[in-house]
Image 1: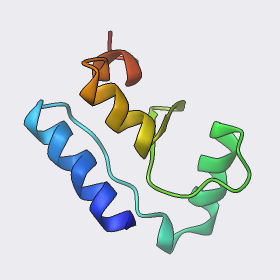
Image 2 (image 1 turned 90 degrees about the horizontal axis):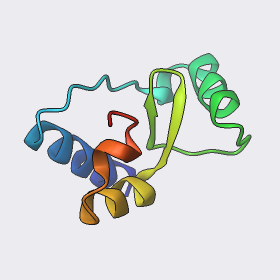
Image 3 (image 1 turned 120 degrees about the vertical axis):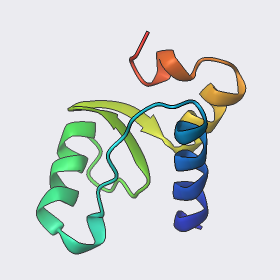
Length: 78
């Protein structure tokens, strides 16, 4: 399930030529805890979307924003 969501996110970002950095949280507990702290949600699970240190939202919010034509706003790029 996570893999499918990650691939959809990458497919959409690649298709819109929006650069991104993918971070593998499975190999680094410290980075996982940092993600949770930045989002302010202690039990947050990937995939999650950030723009730098700004938390944008989860997969469902990303997908909804894309479907509604609000992706750039969701990503804090507009």
